[in-house]
Structures are given as structure tokens and as C-alpha cells.
Amino acid sequence: MGTLALMLAAAPAAVPEFNAAGELVRVVLSLLGIIGLILAAGWLTRRMQRRHGVAGRRIRCVETLAVGARERLLLLDADGKRLLIGMGPGGMRTLHVYDGAPAEPVAIEQPAAPPLPAFGELLARWKRSA
Image 1: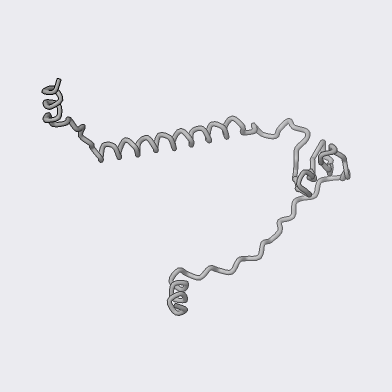
Image 2: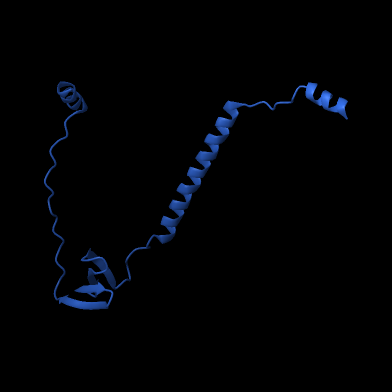
């Protein structure tokens, strides 16, 4: 038994070769596969949830506005009339019924943001202040 231990200790240990490039390619391909699966699942869920047009629907939600943590206002279009509905923990309540043709939405102009300085200008300012 003692000679067997000496023979095993004297024998060179078989070390498996490590191919870094091959492992890197395997990891990158695995990550790309996972990202592809995530994108495919997102595309599939969007496609499954897509509404097939609003034709034939008599009620549609024009706009919602959160008024509190659990309260909101809904503006609904139902059979040519507009309804303002209040919704909260206590239920739903009709607040107002608008008669006549629905008003066209008014586009609100946003003030133009001042142009951002170029990166070179920011760098020059930073160098001057330092």
C-alpha cells in the first residue's frame, strides 16, 4: 500500500487544458441567447395584448387623471356623449355628462428649452474654473 501512494505522488497530475477564448465565446453566445429570449418574450406579450382596433366599441376612455393615491378622474366617450367619472375606494360616481359634440383636444405648446452648450464649451469652462 505504501508503494502505491509513492507511485501516485510521483505521477504527474493530469491538468485539463483551459481554453480562455473558447470559454469567452461560449459565455458571450449564452448571453446573446438569453437577451434574444427576453426580447422575443417582450415582443410576443405586446403582440398578444395588442387591441385589434376600436371599431365596434361604444365606450372608450379618452383621458385619466390621478387625483390622489387611490382616486382618479376618467373622461369617457360613450355613444357620442362625454362622461366625467370619479373613481375611488368607495366606488364610481358620475360627476358630469357633457352634451353635444366632444371638444377637439387643444395642443398645448411647450416652451422651447434653451439649447445645451456643446461639450467643448463645458470642458473649457471646467478648465477655467479649476
